[in-house]
Image (tube, rainbow, N blue to C red; front, side):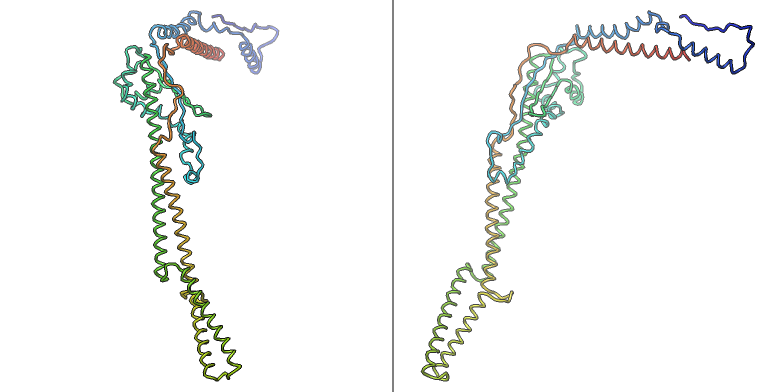
Length: 411
């Protein structure tokens, strides 16, 4: 490594300067030294560069080439695609009972694809598949290499972690379509895992829908029970009013009282006409006139009693108007509770019919197919990725070392 030396030649014409001049000359010397170009290879030989390149770039590429070219096992991918539909999507239903029910299940259909995707990645899915097709045995096949093979002695948590690298689930936000891809080391295993996973997803969705229908049926039954209790209370109240007022139909009683009052009024008018006619013949003190007056007074008392029985200014008085008011209130409550009970029974019947059919179902429009060729690993792409990454890291490392040495030389 060459060095550049700057020396000051003595000048006989000028004596030694002061301290300030020495400081200025020292600053000038440092500035001249910073302007000297220093090539990067002066801090190390080409042998160091070759050795570092071989260790940091060539060796990883060689290891990756040997692994992906000779050791890495083939992985076969099987996929299936599905959507989640409801029976009401095919038959529009806008009747009154459906409006009263509120279509509560329809608001959840948009969340079901994401629920299914979450289940596919969950421990429950791994446990169900391991119980039905033994995932441990499939992922620990002798066809798998030592790095890709699952250790059959691992616990359920390790199996679930390994499952995350063997499955891919994508949900389309717009259409709600779900794409599922599973990997295995032989084509038959990939096909079996995909089929079992589809069946497990169908069972999960059906269980969720069944619980929702069961809850809807239970809520409809509670509404029927409440409506029945209210209707029974209305009938009891109507019976109590009839017993209290002493009449079964107050309208009939009022009609009879009105007819009786009308007959009394007619009789009174007839007696008044007869009294007026007798005054032309006899005096008012005649015995027959006194009898007519007594009869007219009796009819007036009867008319007053009949009128008070029908209407009265006293709010506590037992009148026909009060009886009619009580009957109308209880009759209105009876009719309303009866209609509410009819609607509740119709809603319960609707919920029962929906509970008897599969309301939500999985529609697999792309069923699983047995793969013919291995899709993974992508050997050339993997080796190229390792080479580019290693070369980039090596370049960054060399630049950092050169920068540090350059800084140390300048200091």
